[in-house]
Length: 106
Image (cartoon, rainbow, N blue to C red):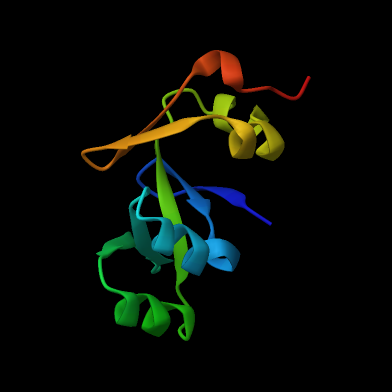
């Protein structure tokens, strides 16, 4: 199941570890190794399949960068289903989603 994560710096990530191989093989989205230490969040691009396998065998998660959380409650209210169904465009390390494709919990 995909999960949204807010890092210590306020950026928003989606945990896609369970679907990482499929997403990597599609070549459409940029994937990142994601882990947090006591003080910071580490995110490193995954560009090679052997690196992806190393990350999957480790304690790290494989994530997509969603964006910066400017309003603390907005991202927590987006339904996972609407995020999964929304059309996405990846460009220069950012993922763009049409706002009207997203649904929010009430």
